[in-house]
Image (cartoon, rainbow, N blue to C red):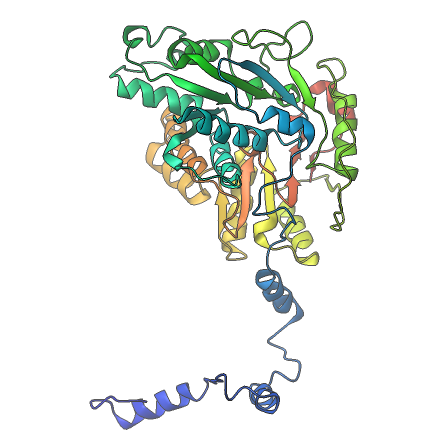
Length: 444
């Protein structure tokens, strides 16, 4: 119905022509014949020069739902080795080492829930990577138990340190304060001590950080468990005589029972194992990959290598989009990672401006970077400080289920997973000792 007393005849005629372009079919009127008639009226029964195949593929890619795994949205079935490690016990100090994709994160999540059930108190879960706290939140949400989220404090070491310092009116003057094992000594009797503390990415923690946690925030009968993978020791932390991460707060050997790459199977697991043999033989104690339990996964695995002799962000973006479009990959299933923010920032810009797609990133946009550069000028330290504020906020809100393409540095993406991963490797980021193995300018 159209009712507009003050409208003129031309306005009414224009509205009438506009409304005639709408077609409405209800439950009672939706018949095969009426649908065919509507298709003919809208000229959808013939090809169109306006609706090209590229446009069709774009619609198809957006409308197709993301890949849904059989185990998605429900608690994973644990192996015998995983089940043992989820048992919560008071007074235990333990180090758990696991190969990539062995389920360390969910084991930690399940054990944290069990620890809360055992103690009835809040549980402290610490990471190194700020973005990983959101992944752990997702893992805990898979646990089939009743619990209140307020009982799980999930954060990284630096945010936890700053929060506690602020609570006790202690000023952090310099970065070295984070490494001061006696920073909280003046308020030692006032700090909150937890009866269950779980640390992930233990290979990235400094010895002093362990001292801070155990000295000021660990109850006498606390359960203290460190999860780690020395092959992800990207910050070069010291190793012991067994070429494993040093955790003085937890004596004894590492538990190495998580040696089955459940998440990584087939070609990808083999690639990870061969990578260790090639690059880590002289540095770390190599993992012994156990064969995972038989799993029916009908999704084909594709590993491709693309070499760019004369690389640019534009060329890399074009190749990535070509693969995404040709394989009809939903944006939510795509993650693009690189050691450097600079190349990712340019690729992100092209996704947003050339494809008009929203993205999820762990860093600033090109527009933000250029605006800050103009505002701050040549004050490099001040510029970096402002960029870190943006990045910290982005990392705090980095989630996988956003429905958009994700872009992140390798450091910030460590621990996450993606159905379709594009890894950008630049020659200048590769150690000289390995250049003969990666003798190109840029690879995807």
